[in-house]
Amino acid sequence: MTSSSYGAGDASYRAAGGAGGIERLVHRFYEYMETLPEARALRAMHAADLSEVRDKLAVFLVAWLGGPNEYRSRFGSISIPGFHARFAIDEAERDAWLVCMARAVDEQPWAEAFKRYFMQVIAVPAERVRVASVMRRAGG
Image (cartoon, rainbow, N blue to C red; front, side, top):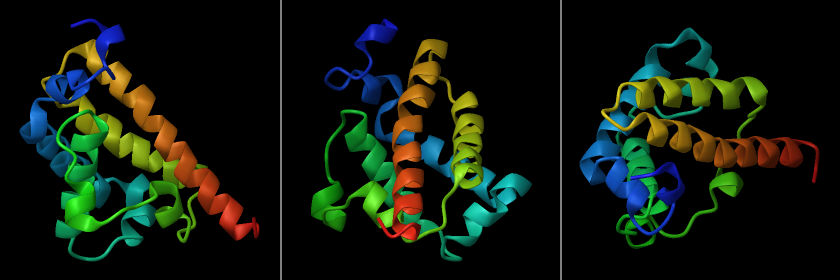
């Protein structure tokens, strides 16, 4: 599979290893969030029990990467930036989130081209969340 085919149909979902591959990614992502010092503030924004948020992120990523879309039927509709706007998310929190994700991605048995693609595209919603948080705090 070429990097240009990621993002078309279910190509990214398949490249990530389907639902199982995405669940492994999310599991490692939250382990990094719980252990990396730079993610301490980010972790504090979450409930003590991460079970629900792990499930939500996995289901979201499955659909976002072109797999079955069960998010709405399981959790209702959501605006990712809008939901996160209530948190104080600046560059440090966005970057910590991306560090946790990058470390988790590095461990996946994915093609290097897909790893690069995934980190490039996941940075877009991460930045949108930061902007929504800044705008809300600025009164906009």
